[in-house]
Image (cartoon, rainbow, N blue to C red; front, side):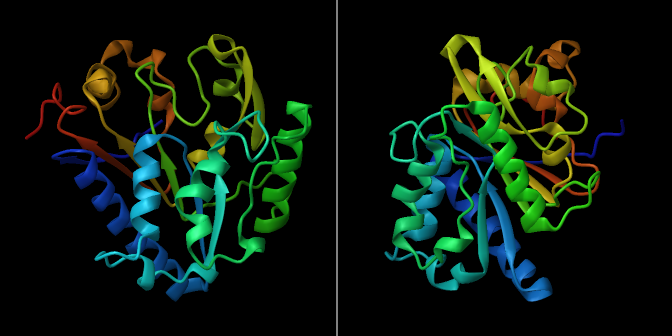
Length: 254
């Protein structure tokens, strides 16, 4: 596989990273709405995305909220915990609390993963059907998101693609339920083929504890194959890494 050259931007800290991400979000949403009338984005969980969502939704001295066509944005999720939507661990709940409840998004534009179903496999099947219906997919076709936001853990996991997971080898399904042993819980996640079909993928990574993994993934360390984030290489799209100085501290740049 020919890997696209990632665009790497090193920001001073988490706040600067969130601002850079908000600028990208605004730019891409504006272009998509102008070109085709709507914008599709798959959201991530995590503390850094939470700051981004709050920034996009705030009314105080920032240029994002009033410049976004919220009624033209369709929100999806890259992964979800197997919990009800009001649960504090829910990625949907985090996005609702920090952004979606504060802006004029039509309810029908919010396409959450319905993880309250006790059968995680059924949750995945239902969300795959949601994607097929919205994007009007033929049987072998993949959805193409305008933007997918991703984070990365120190173990190199992204979305809910964890080291050693069977999802990493999945060639056809769009959504899978995967058991994560260290959490003793299921996660529901988009599969690598779906992620890699996006028009743009943006990683948001901050924190010194991730520096070694960032170096390995971005600078082709032989050990990087152990890290699922290394599998994310869009086939026809942009790959952008927004990292703060702490997370980028081991990178060789320039």
